[in-house]
Image (cartoon, rainbow, N blue to C red; front, top):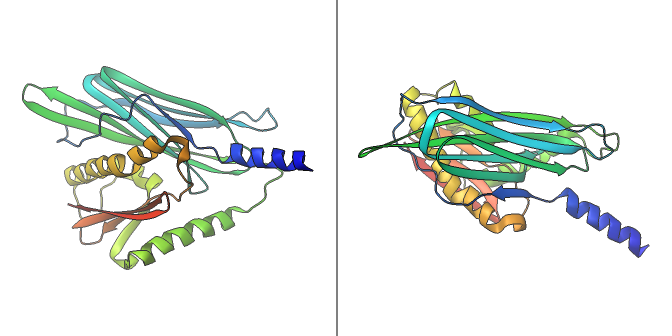
Length: 260
C-alpha cells in the first residue's frame, strides 16, 4: 500500500513540474523607440506531441530571426496549461540574428496548452539606441481517454482566480478592455483601442519590459520552486490613459500600473 501511495505521489510531482530553462536571466528587455529599417524575418512557436507513446511527450519550440545581426537579441517564451503557469524559456545573444528555444517534457493528463513568445532586438547606432519586437503564439489540446476533468471546470477555476484578483484590488472591470496574457499577440496586427500603430508598439514594448522585470525574472530566479499560478490578466483602460497587469506569484497578489 505504501508503495502505491509513493508511486501516486511521484506521478503527481512529475505532472506538476515547472519547465524552466534560461542561458542567463540578464540582460533586461528594455523598450527603445522602434527602428523601422530592421524587422523580423521569422517569429514563431510550435507545440507538438508524440501521440505514439502511452504518455505523450510535448515539444515546445520558439524561433525568431531578424534581417541582420543586432547588438542584442532576447526571446522570452511562456507556457500555460489550462490557464495556469507551466513553464518559461529565456535566452539572449549579442550580435546575432537568430534565437532558438527548445524544450521537451512528458505530460500525464489531458489539457489545453497555450504559449506566447516575445521576440526582442536592441539596435545601437553611434549615440542612438532603438529596438524592435514582435510576438508569436500557439496552442495545443491534449486529449487522453483517462481525462479526469472537463475544460469547462478548468475555465471556471481560471475565471474565479481572475475575479478574485479584480475584487482584491477593487477594480471595475467595465472600465477596461481585458486581455489574458497569451492573447497579447493580437496587437501584432491590430491596435489598442484609441491608440495608433506607433502608440500601440510603444505600450506593448513597455508592457513586456515590465512583465520581464516584475513577472518573468522572479519566476526564473525561483526556478522550480515557483508555485502554480493563474495566467496574468492585462487591463487596458477604455480612456487610453493606462493599463493594469494583475497576477498572483508565490501567494502574493500583485498589480502593476503602466501609464501611457
